Image (tube, rainbow, N blue to C red; front, top):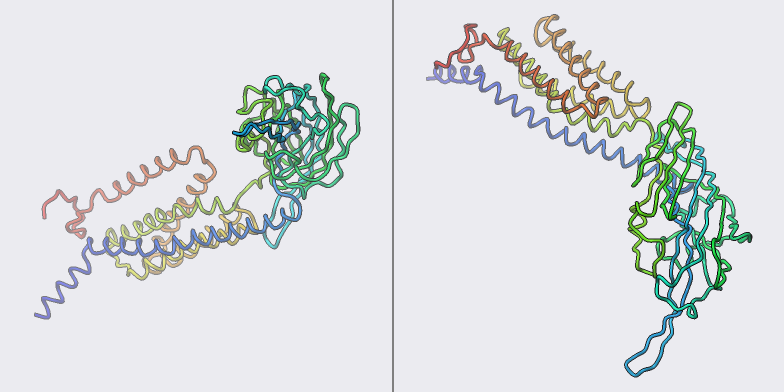
Length: 449
C-alpha cells in the first residue's frame, strides 16, 4: 500500500500539469509584492511632489495671468411690494479690445534633498487698450453709472511671486497698484487700482510691467478681443499646454520662442457682462501657456516599467519550465520563487537609482545587475553554464525590448503586440516535437491519452 501511495505521489509531483499549476500559483503570489512596488513608486512620487510644493510655496506656484479687467459700478433701483424704492450697487466688467503680453522666462533648478523643482523668473510687458465702456448693450441708464469708482484688476494666481511694485500707465496717467482683486470675483488673488474714467471717451491705452516668480509653468487667459502672447526662455524642453497651441514656435538646445494669437470668437465668454453673469470656470478653461517640465520623469517611467512585471516573470518562468521539459531537469518551486524575487528587486533598484542618476543609466545598471545575478544562479540550478547563459540572453532581450517600448510611447502597443506574436511563435516552434502526455518520448503528441 505504501508503495502505491509513493508512486502516486511521485507521479503527481512529476506531472507537467502539477508543475504548471505550481508556477501559476507562484505568479499569483508574486503579484502581492508587485502591488507593493507600485505603492512604493507612488509614495516616492508623492514625496517628490511635496518637496516641489514646499519649494514653490516659498518662491511662487504656477502663475496664471488674468486680465486686466475693467470694473465699473452702477446703481440698481428696485421697488418692494409697498412701492418703496431701494438703491443698491452692482458692477459690470469690461475686457480689453487689444491685449498683448510679451515676456521672457529665466528658469533655474532648486533642490530639496534628492528632489528637484523647476523655478523661473519672468519679466512680462502687458499692454493694450480698452474701448470706452458701452453700457447701452447692458441696458443700464447712463445716469446710474459711477464712473469715478471704476477699478482695473489684474489676476495673478500667486501674489507671492510679485517681486516689484507694479505701476500702470492708464491713458497717459501713472497709477500704482494695490493688493487684492478689487470688486472682481473672477479670481481670488491679484492686484487692482482705481482708474479715472469719464462719461465720454473713446480708446483708452494701458501698459504695465510685471516681475514675477513662478514654478513649473506660466499661463495667460485670453481676455482681449484680440490677444497676442510672445514668450521666450532658455529652457530646452517646453510643454505647450492649455486650450490653445502656439501659432508659431521655435524649440532648440538654446531654448524656445512661441507666439499665440487668440480671438474673441475662439473663447467661451463675452467682452462685457454684469456681475456673476460669467462664472470663473469659463475664464479658467481658456487658459493657455507653457510648462517647464523636467525632461525625464523617473516615477512615470518606472511605473510603466513595473506594468510589465508579470509578463517578465511569466516569460522567465516559461524559460525554466522549457528547460525542465526538454532537458529532463527539475527546478524546485522555491528556486522559481527566488528568481521571481530577483526580477522584482530590479524595479526597486531602478527607482532608487533613478532618483539620483536619471532613468536611462539607472535602468542599464539595474538590468545588468539582475541579468548577471540570475544568469549565475541559473547556471547552477540548471547544472550547465550554457543553459545559464541562455537564460541570461533571454533576459537581455527582454530588458532591451522593454527599454525600446518605453522610448516609443506612440508605438508601444504595436511593438508590444508584434513582440508577443514573435514570442508565441518561438515557443510553439521550440515545443513542436514535445509529446505533452509523455515528454520523455520526444515524439509529437497527437491527442491520444
